[in-house]
Image (tube, rainbow, N blue to C red; front, top):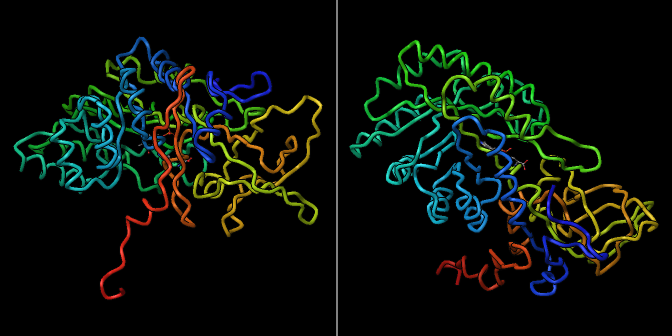
Length: 422
Ligand code: LLP
């Protein structure tokens, strides 16, 4: 469920019309709904009720400071994967003890900053990374709390580019070697082992891979405890999928995901951490674009819109589907016709949808991409010197621009011509 609905023939974000926002800031833009983000955070909290837990929003999905602030105010923690994200977490007011640091290639500087911020834990992904963190922590006279990310070798049954839990993926250490690596961790003075971490992929639409992975984590918990480690936290990662195609997709509900967690690891007395990103932000955002032209091609029509692959790369990168709807509600009996929805960038990959059956949209009319709140704005670029598009946050009948559109001057000022070329 989200808060983007038609009322009196107009598309609304909560109580604001999309056309009012467009009139004020122009198109294209991203718009996010506060109520939807808050609701999704609550749903996970409820799904884990009965177990001590912390929901750490994976900010890679949408790291706008205003979005982070909503999560922080709701009491959530944050999952960060870079120095930049850690700076954002701190700027959003997230207490250090609610920040977990994930990622396969944490640098010396990132570790130092994490230790200075006294973060909750580093999720370690390899032995060299563990040795580096030990060095950094020791040189600072501190200890860093860690979990070790294990790779359970399960097939998450999702897109190959976002599957992370198979032996051939670059993530974590093989679960078969976990005991050995935990023994090594325990021997390092600068580290304190607090738990186990696992994350098997993103946009999972089946709970079975979670069930297999979490069972392996439960078994490992017993073994590690028998080996003398104090395993008190389990970070189970993120990855729960969302319905991108609302008419025919029904991914598992957070409640059922919570039941899997309860059933597999709920009795271990561990604090459960999860790192959902997409489910928090995905359906809380729309990308709004205007139609530049409707072009009649050979045997097909093209809707050429003013958003492009640089603004939303998911269709080009993962063949991802986004529902695309007109901003002005079509009449029930409006004719439906197939259309290719494309951006203005000079590559055929700049295609959002092929032969999409939808009500006819004409030049000057806006469309909304649903489920664009996660991995949308954060993955955008200025390819073709197209400025990053603004982000807007709605809260009831209020809205604010939470990242303004840069001017061309702003963009040019970031670069310089060296003296020898002047
Ligand atoms: N934790 C870790 C360690 C992760 O690598 C990820 C996502 C998450 C949590 C959050 O997963 P989520 O709940 O959002 O599925 N750009 C891609 C998705 C990449 C996901 C990367 N890791 C896309 O647009 O589909």
